[in-house]
Length: 171
Picture 1 (cartoon, rainbow, N blue to C red):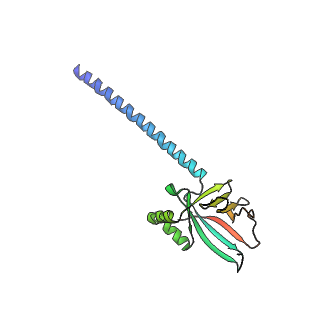
Picture 2 (cartoon, rainbow, N blue to C red):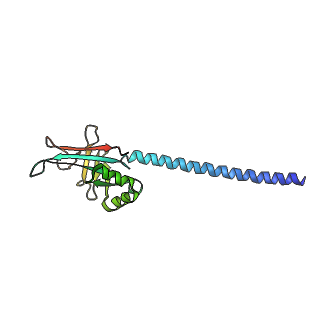
Picture 3 (cartoon, rainbow, N blue to C red):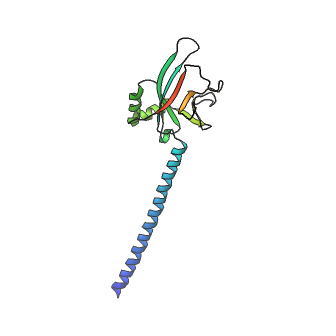
């Protein structure tokens, strides 16, 4: 009889412990699912996070011949998610170095990063100053960010001028 009582008490303790473990697993799983949903919502609201864009331009300066060039925008992730680094020299090779080396990545974002926002759903504004005067790009004709947006001329381009920003897949 005594053994049966001990078995019943042990069985009740084991049942309570298993029930508590089950509750912890459910709560932990719910937190994990909530974190995943928040992450997906963030990426939907911030489509540029952890992306690389190539910017190619050809423009006529106030004086002199046409200027042409290419550089890259590296949009940050995690603690740098609202920042962008512009890579002027070294091309795609330099971009890969930055993305593949955590120390270089953190150094670039610590030293050279600028804030950015997306305004009105179609203007990418890069810069830390007044956002209306900051350097930016505007979506035109449903394309990627095309054109250097200038609030004074409302993005009117001179014939022959090119300002094109396109996504780059880094592998």
